Length: 235
Image 1 (cartoon, one colour):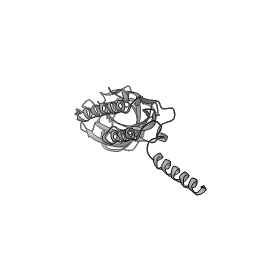
Image 2: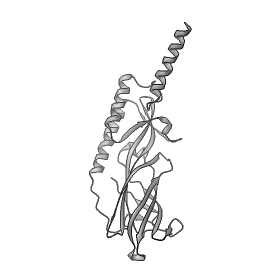
Image 3: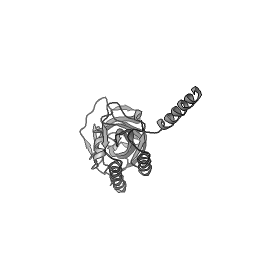
Image 4: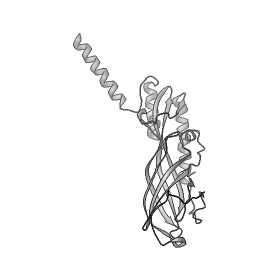
């Protein structure tokens, strides 16, 4: 009898451990069919990736869906918005700092011979999707490092050395995964596109889960700019 109990306990631990390796914290809220449907929604969407709750920032709000069907509809709407955003062709900004707000010359600008580091905030352009409205922070902080030639009004970009970004976890954490840059307007302007995701918690049919929501920030920055705030051109 003891051997049987030990075997049953081992099997139970094995099953629990296997399931815990998925994004879901427990099975209390979803039936097998519901679980399979949520996994299918996750697999079909390019806007969301389900993850373990341990990835969700402490204190982050939880978005609740009463049913799996409600969750599916919301994700489909989010996918449509992101597809529309991807299809937009942005015109190159020939005005350099037109999209920038405010400026200040202080220690945030660290200059060296032929290279500069600029630190500024890209203000989030609000999404029309109610999920992303819960996810997006007010803005993200960007660290732009580049090389240049010339001085004063004749200064031009020669190379973008590094672009990194982050947020302070309110209401979610922004994680940058990739970037693209293009120098234009005769070296006077750079367009930067940052891809990444926000991390937030979800409750689907009473089941808690973590999720990564894909997002993009696109902005212009002039070579002589000292702007502290820059507008996001996405959407």
